[in-house]
Image (cartoon, rainbow, N blue to C red; front, side, top):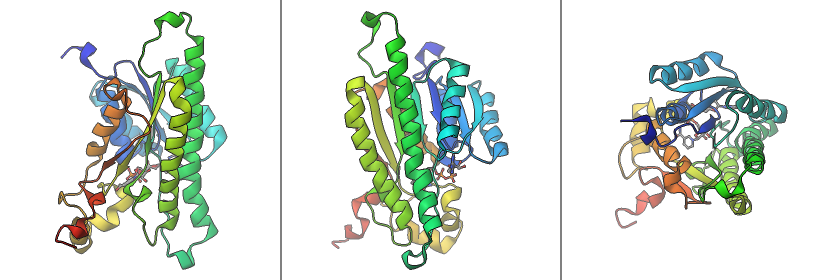
Length: 275
Ligand code: NAD
């Protein structure tokens, strides 16, 4: 197939937390669709390089950038590097996130704060920089008549089914993802007049290191499947395909939405048998 059929040809995309799991799959998939990708990692450069190698293997284009998404100066530096390298930005996949699980009665302020800092403040910092860049580059376009009707910039936030399913033992995580939903909807409303689209994806159980403790234990895996009507755990690629669609012009009229990629986990499976 000719290059011109690649859905994201020459679009520039930052994928935060792409040294592993869902972020890595998103970076590789976007590159396979023609995007020039910024692979971001916070501490593990070796894993970041593995993502780069995968992208190089499929003939894609990428640069590797270290930044902690919860630190303003590092986020700004990552966006500056992107613009210095590629001259523009079209897509932000704001994926970086973590868990610090503890029973509520035992949860420390550090465990609470770390998760909010990365999962929610990190979204704020990255989305704000992306939106500023989209608006600035649109203003710089010389001929306003050339402007397409299509979106000038796309943002996809990585949320979770726990933006609507309460999760005992993980209140910091659930609170951060619940926050992501209302943050996404509010900035989507505010940025839509600029022709910037903002959406979220909310994965269910996806096989990555974040939940290895569950899928690597046969008993825990069996009880996890009780929660999934589709009866399989998701893959990072399941999420990456949806992220690519939301980043492309094929979803141009989709704005402020959360797409659940969860094999039906949010369908109240315990009611399948009459409750
Ligand atoms: P993962 O642990 O493989 O990936 C998380 C990534 O975020 C890692 O690359 C990590 O280095 C990066 N990261 C953590 N802190 C960072 C920081 N301060 N700055 C920059 N990067 C940082 O797990 P994953 O499952 O791929 O998680 C990716 C996203 O998907 C997270 O936001 C997570 O909450 C969400 N999610 C995962 C699942 C699942 O079942 N795996 C379900 C719902 C949502």
